[in-house]
Amino acid sequence: MTEHEHVRVAVIGSGFGGLGAAVRLRREGITDFVVLERAGTVGGTWRDNSYPGCACDVPSHLYSFSFAPNPDWPRTFSGQERIQEYLEGVADTFGLRPHLRFDSEVRRARWDAEKLWWELETASGTLTADVVVSATGPLSDPKIPDIAGLDTFPGKVFHSARWDHDFDLRGKRVAMIGTGASAIQIVPAVQPVAGHLTLFQRTPPWVMPRADRAITPAERWLHRRLPFTTQARRGLLWGIRELQVQAFTKRPDELGLVERLARRNMHRAIKDPALRARLTPDYRIGCKRILLSNAYYPALARPNVDVVASGLAEVRGSTLVAADGTETEADAIVFGTGFHVTDMPIAERVVGADGVSLAESWKGGMAALRGATAAGFPNFMTIIGPNTGLGNSSMILMIESQLNYLADYMRQLDVLGGRVALTPRETAVTGWNNRVQDRMRRTVWNTGGCDSWYLDDNGRNTTVWPGTTTEFRQATRRVDVGEYEVLRPPAAAVSTASGTTSRTEKKAEVNAA
Picture (cartoon, rainbow, N blue to C red):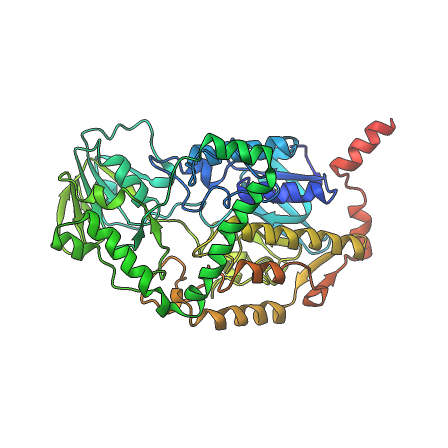
């Protein structure tokens, strides 16, 4: 990275959100941008989560960009390696490689109120940017609970998102901490090789059958020859999930039938009444994310598996002590305890117009206008921001809606002309957030009787979108400039800024010479 480099846009992260932003910028004719990635390859969460059994719980044809359909998905629910391959392919197909800056973790991003640009310090150098797009995602930084005595454990300890592939679990006594989406995939994968597996379960999940199968060669041939069949398949998958939204957001009582199906799924595999009781949730289905697996319950019924219906409270050497006093010996501890979702670490590194970090600004709870822009942080946009998550469909749909908003945001800056910035009005952010939270009150995520990772420390749901993806797309089609203040720099700052050369300008100078 050249010293004092200036770009039009700096994108942070190269997962679905970051690569999607890069593709959209190029389609808008903007090529003066970089994608800053802390690792050495693209992929985001699908690069980091390489644990045994890792796969997506959204159908492949829906969990991919509408502008980059893949007719060759091998299964209806694809595994991590295939999704990673897909993202590498997107980077190649859309010519994104020249824009990628690997090993460039953003350590600090500070808004310069005089020059109206962002100053970014990265692991590979410094640069400035007119606009910053944060696409780090909520599932990027693992969360390990503070367990007393964990540092005394003589065995191996790692998080599911930082899997140690060099450590052989064969014959080992393995402790799995947590029962989320990662854990229900890890347990069936590890159980056959582990000497003994102990699952520490604070709260049992609702688990539905996974309708996974191989996509036949004939289907793939059809999708390649007749692309509209791929679009039709995607549209059908999308439509089914749109029809389900009402039950999650307005009529949670209608989920009773789904609960009965989930109970039947468990009863087929779990014959022991005592184990069945430990695995039966006491909250409404959908309050936590509904998990999909055909192998989880059968694995728990195996003789080398124990389920402790309590969380891990203390570690005494190789002895793990649950909150209910149960003691277990282990050689390895695997944490499937989720991520920093409502307290994203990137927020601590972003400093806005008033010298306040985004983390400090969000101390009372994350809030952003249309899930994208935060008050006090000009020309800063988040992909998968507050209240943009989904409980039953594909996040790619939400990402693409936010990319529409990003595209129009850049158009509005061009229309305004010159060095200019937009910062959302506090009243606009508050109004939007109040409307979202008002709709959230009757959703299953707030009324279902569970304590989920959707809720922040104040008990507010700042994670999920309480509506359909169609509604969100409508809300983010255009930027309403009336919701923003227009900022322009003082004359002195303009004069100083004019001496900075962007990559595009440098290229033009070289060509002219």
